[in-house]
Amino acid sequence: MEKDAPVRRRSSGDGADVIATSRRLNDSKTQSQYEPYKQAEWGFVNHWYPAVFSEELEEDQVEGVQICGIPIVLRRVNGRVYALKDRCIHRGVRMSAKPMCFNKETISCWYHGFTFNLETGNLDTIVGNPDDKLIGTTGVTPYPTEEKCGIVFVFVREDDFPLDEVPPLAHDLPLAFPDNSERFPHPLWPAAPHILHEDAVGLGIHRTGESNWRVACENGFDNAHILIHQDNMIVQSNNWVLPLGIRPVSNDCITTFEDDNGPSGLMQWLFSDRWEPILENETLGIKVNGVNGRPYRTSFYLPGVLLVENWPEEYIAQYEWYVPITDDTYEYWEVLVKRCPTEEEREQFKYRYKTVLEPMALRGFNNCDLYARESMQDFYGDGSGWNDEQLVDTDVSPITWRKLASRCNRGIARPGVGVTGSVKASSLRLRDVSEGSPSRYFVRKVDF
Ligand code: FES
Ligand SMILES: [Fe+2]
Image (cartoon, rainbow, N blue to C red):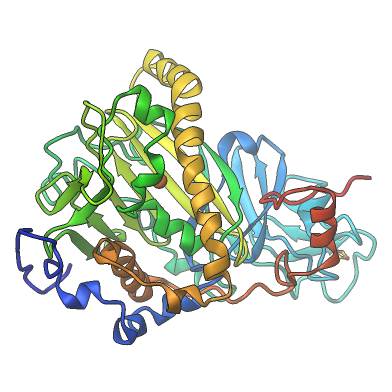
């Protein structure tokens, strides 16, 4: 928890001195407090990330993904998901590119038959070389997995991160409600559902964005950016009052927390008197239309997880992850979570998700965010944007996050080596571009 007692000052004029200078300024001293974040181009390792939806990995199916520059192969056996480093120790191809499995305990490399134990990653045998002295002496890194609410999570660790020190999944997920309702009251909406609730149903999509994962994170909880959503169908069709922006009017507008037995994150006290919605700009002569209030609140957690409470409808929470693939691509996860204790409620939620929520909220509304992040990429992609940006009061949110992330991450990913994206102008990447084939999260399967 933040130690310094918050000074409460109310907005009276232009708000220029409402937020303490130390929180508002982004000078070199402030920047030095988030130097580790600036170095985390490839993400934070030793954290839990969503890898695939459960339904994307059926029994015996094998898929390859890349997270924080680490190639990972997944295989489901007897219902359980195993994850190994997806780079054969022999000559470096990805096992997932042409799945070859001879039993339920191993996966073999399709090239020369190196065969790895799914549980331990050890080199158990070599198909055409069963007496080789390398067998039993080496292997690939195994990764812990958890499956909750229809999502397979993987603990993406450095090779030497001790398995007995892997924290629970809950430490890398949003706060749960009502457990935290007293600490973070929410008088305007019911307790947000959590993916660890037994009766929670999660429905969503994931897609690849062409920008750095940090640029994506900072868009998720940016209180000035709602301007881009003014024309969205879900806003207009519901007649929502969507402010032009939301301005902090108190030093305690954001609470950060670094719990020993829970997640590290920040809570933005939206729809309280600590933030002021801007409904008019006199200079430009514009006003917000709409009649229906749409209260919501955003909180953000390591390693880059967004919770939007009471969004896009009551009793639903929107989760987002911005999973680093390389330093210039990320997998954008958008998941709506609702508690559905009965089969009937489950079916109703699925129907509403398919007919309204996915097209209007996840695609219609969030498409604007995807474009906005990609529009920032040229500025931040070469690193210059972090020094050349000129921030304002509302940007207290990303500054707070950058400092928190610098303090609380469990490891900065090393730039990818020998993986997709480590050589920017690789001929394979250029072939993809010339074929009009977009960047992909799943491994490209060998087709023969
Ligand atoms: S590259 Fe995998 S066995 Fe040779
Ligand atoms: Fe947005």
